[in-house]
Image 1 (tube, rainbow, N blue to C red):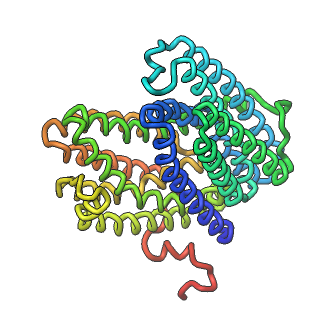
Image 2: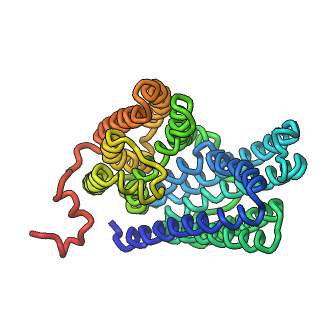
Image 3: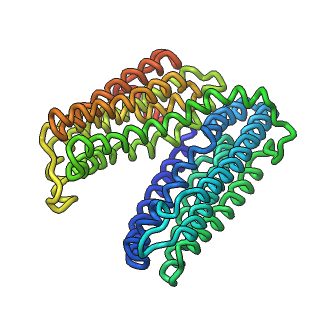
Length: 446
């Protein structure tokens, strides 16, 4: 494993997390105080659209990206060019279609659904919605250029550049709003800077990848068909995650009332801190894993899967113990005593944390190997089932029932991911010796 590349990738992921947290912490008070809560709330509702548009390429960016890494690793530049241009043709066609649909839908929506008292009127809201939708679609088109850079071993550069674009657009919008700017001016600022960012991604990718040629001359219908199944499966994974996270909160509210929802969401947020840390380590390793799998380096792939699984389980167990024994205190300190959770719920959530800390990053390994279809369809079925189970259990046992349903889902996904990895990669080592893959050979104990 190219440890220097992975280390730089970890640093770039950490930089990205800091950027996102900083922008979010600064944006909320500035926009809320400058615009007022009615207008800021209306902005938040309109700004949810770009988040959903991130999945608008139907997973083609993800599926094509992992295939690109494998083709470049094998030195097949012609195949990489065909994959890139085929996926680009689909993404651009989807971009035009989606933007047209959003514009058409926004025009037929009743005024009362868009206008807000002491906020934007319906016409202004439609304009902001269309510009923010364009922003989301432009951002969607950067995925393939990011994938091309990662195929060339530039994960750290691509992640850092992407985070920097987010930082610049966040700071620019803060300046616009503090200068008295309107939501439309803020939306146009986002669109302008993200457009420049995508142009920058394209320039960096073309300099790194000599095989990358813009256009559609090498696009093949057969390649699009080959990408379709893994692309749709890749799209299902974040959608199922959204159903699980947001749907369970809705189920808790429907079964026990809105006042109980903050208990569930606050404890869930605490339980996912360790998961975000593990993604910071796992994601930079995945391009290396995809490349070596394409080269047929089976023993190396198995050793890395074993090391990642062991690391995830170890960190998850430590975080689970911290939550189980200190969850009440952490909630009290974080929420200033406003929110408290039942002890059984905290313990059950801690156990689920350990399972989730293993299967969530490991599902990304399946995605990196383009072997995620069976898992994705199973998760897409299990996530809504867990939401309905949460409603039934919360109705019977109170908010602790949500932790029971979430734990059952995490355990089921853990078993499925482990079995799938064994099928795809074969037996892989676990335990202390497995972690030695992260240690340079000259420093390993004899």
